[in-house]
Length: 195
Image 1 (cartoon, rainbow, N blue to C red):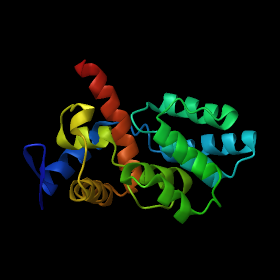
Image 2: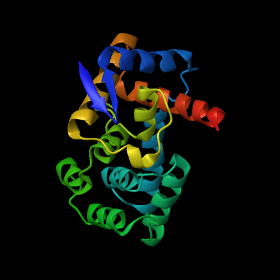
Image 3: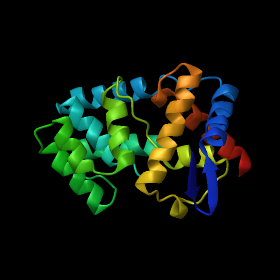
């Protein structure tokens, strides 16, 4: 299968091979990234007496263009003070989640975007089979550092990358979210070396 992306023609085989190569060169740091993110969400849930599902939605809602450390800090700040230190749109989403009934359907409707919805579900439900395709997942699948402005994806492009991560996971014998998390950790190290 082929996919056009930013002046390139990507193939499933080559993209899967890049993902698998990065996974195999890693020390598997990140294999438990989502369970650890869920534990962090549980800590916030207990600390602020907010349902776990809502905390996971708030974390995801505050994730775009934030490092994980920054994401955690502003999620805790939002739950503590109501201030998110993010855009008005994302702050509104978090307020809507906080005031929702706390169902998966309602929270995914509030979040809307493919990336933040998958991120929410990956943190909340360890059995969720989706993949969070963020800027790092795209860059490593393409094999180069791209600027954030060039990373907007059509639905077909997003689904192409999801499929590549799922195929990689099947070949590696792990869950798709584990491939994404392990390669995300490895890509961040590699990206630092390029600077």
